[in-house]
Every structure is written in structure tokens, then in C-alpha cells.
Length: 97
Image (cartoon, rainbow, N blue to C red; front, side):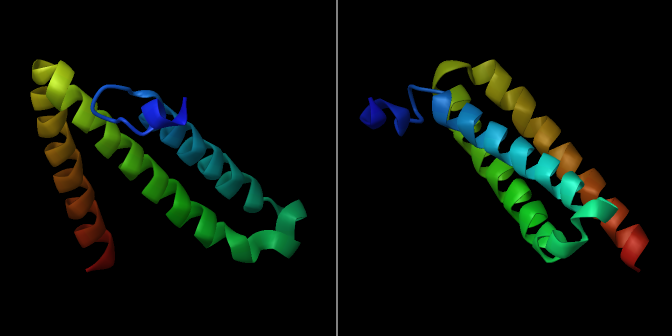
């Protein structure tokens, strides 16, 4: 069962699990920002970083699956990924500098 889970070329379950874990970490990030969770606020940045990393790894695993099985979706997602990274870089540049 687990040997098929890590076959990202032919099985998309790992990417879905990573997305879900990333979303769960994002929810935990939001919860840790509440005033009642003040004792655990030092874990908030780690949750945010882990959320970002899990979602990027999940998206990468999904792109590998799409590359082999859905070439048109892969090309479209690749273009949108580039546009979103460019948009994010512009926003960070404008906010920081």
C-alpha cells in the first residue's frame, strides 16, 4: 500500500495528503494568532513556514503527475504558476522596498 503512495508519477494521493497537511498547518497558524493562544504564539512562524513548504511540495508532486497523464493541464498550470510567482514577487518588492 505504501509503495504505491510514493509513486507520484502514477498516483496523486501523496500530493492531496500534502495539500491537506499544508491547509491544516495554515489553520493552526490562524488559531495561534488568537489572543487565547498567547502561550503558543512562538510556534506561529514555524506553522506558516511548514504550511508554505507542504503546499509547494504537494503542488510539485501534482505537477509530476500532470506531466505524465494530463499534458494540457500541466502546461496551463505551469503558466499560472509562473504568473502567480511573478505577481507575488512584485507585491513583496513593493511592500519591502
